[in-house]
Image (cartoon, rainbow, N blue to C red; front, side, top):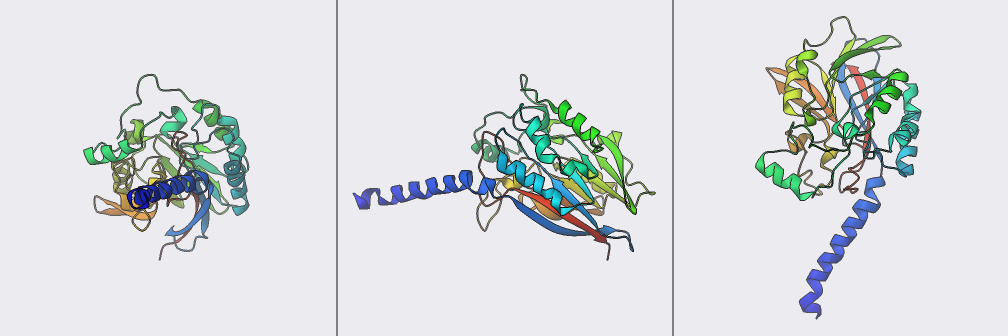
Length: 308
């Protein structure tokens, strides 16, 4: 019996252990990524930017709430929230409680599809199938008829009341001590809400620094920002691949960016220009797939320094 059933039983045990680890430990193993990006003018003091993304808050996620609250101890110069705060229509109060200490700092935000609409139960294997088919998730399509409406207006009102700048197809500014930051943002390309024509024109010459912000790093958005010569683009959405292969990396990105740039700092080139790109792996998951493997949940502290 051992010879006949030993290998299948061993594989099943390994698989069960992997699922238990992914769902019980890694999904709550919050990390802080630290990166340095040389994008400031010469002589300007370094700036510390905290990026939070893809919180996907569900009721009862106390550890995630406490961890997000603790990030205020980093004392960033400003905060950028790159969307998908919700994964539960009732999650707004807990999201705002988690972000409350961070909302004491200057900040800006864009929304993602899960801020607007509740998630649907999907077979995770469909992401691989859609990648092979070239569909890349929704790939810029509007949500299905009957999608659950999330109370994103309540999030917007609270963020606005805290002084955070709404960058949904909009421009805005943050005035810091000794610096003025211009920001240009897009609404979520994943559900075809991006309108680049409304914000086109490139960086603002009278600002110390101009940044670009979008939830989902679709190539059309990255190309537009880069062609307009933004030095740094911040995005989220990908979850870093969420279920990755150790020593290999992500299998999917849920958009049309390549897997090599699914998370962390990289570059993007378009029309002969190159921008830095930072994609956050986020700190949450869709409520129907609450697992992570070889891809811990994260936030990022970006230290912006003068160009060399």
